[in-house]
Image 1 (spheres, rainbow, N blue to C red):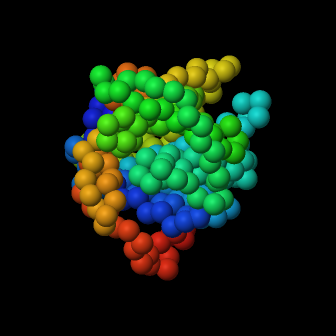
Image 2 (tube, rainbow, N blue to C red; image 1 turned 60 degrees about the vertical axis):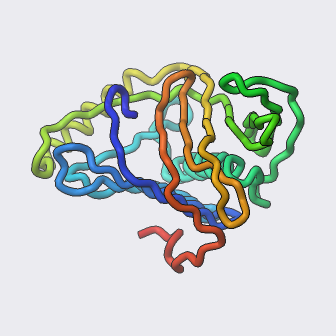
Image 3 (tube, rainbow, N blue to C red; image 1 turned 180 degrees about the vertical axis):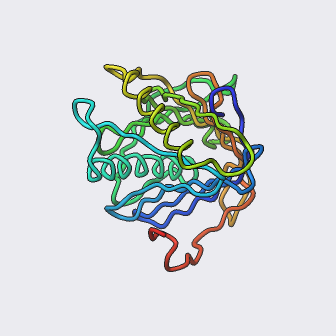
Length: 245
């Protein structure tokens, strides 16, 4: 979901422990001649994001200390932390464990309910104030939900005419307008809200019972949902899978 808009597509997630991670999203919004492909990659100490296709362009503006434009080094550090945490949440949801480079401690937090199902709760904590709460069905012992706190996302939509690729001057103006809007709307302190990852449709894969449906919520609103069509355990990745292209 992007505000009041909904887009569908395909997602491929690749994880090579201990610290390599790629997510590739391919979406085709209405009116575009080619798919829009967004990737985010963690490869050891390096991290980056990229986009292509879609007949247009996009940009990411990340603020540094005091609201200044972040340096390339600051941007890479922020991306590395973000992708490491994102990968760890996926690992916890799928395998209930993390990587050796991001150790997790577990503590029993009591009992609760998830949509009327009785649940046992574990607190998982790690480096850099990482914290996730995991809810397990008391009967099946399968994970039902992950919850965590974080800054509320800022949603900004940019519109352009559909059809052929946008002209360079149109993209430049759209970028300048968005930059001005971002500069005037930066909050003093981001609002912290609850996030949830609901896990369902568990099926057996290579002797493991894994969730095949992931529903992401920001507070009570669904922000993203996908169904897993295929898991591959211990795949042989191509040599350049985690390299910048």
